[in-house]
Image (tube, rainbow, N blue to C red; front, side, top):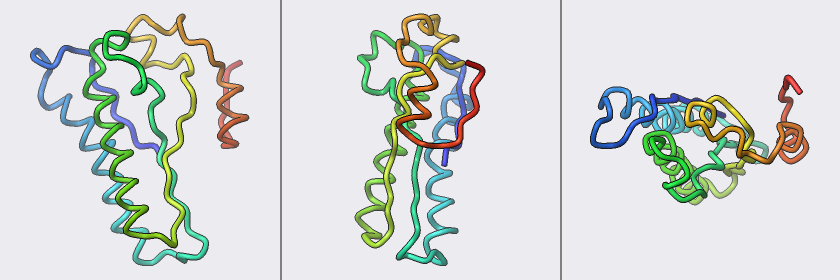
Length: 134
């Protein structure tokens, strides 16, 4: 699953609260909503929940200025998934990091050209049916 709100890049002190908080509403609340709808009726022997994390949250904040809303909400999503995994040990629950591919979020920050991984690597690692323009 990957529900994403991409807030306008901004410093925390000058952020529009509604835009900043929308990242949490989308990236965190969506996981809780999914869990409450899916887990009670899932075939626990075969169920899987995968959350798409953000590779950039492993970078120092100095390299991703203005992305605190997006990256901290993605970190919170990962933590929610960790709790869900502990609470539901018979369901495979994990977050996956797709690699750092030159996407819109990096373009908005002007750092897209510094990204070294290609979308093809993401396809090979995750094995998900992505389509690319490469």
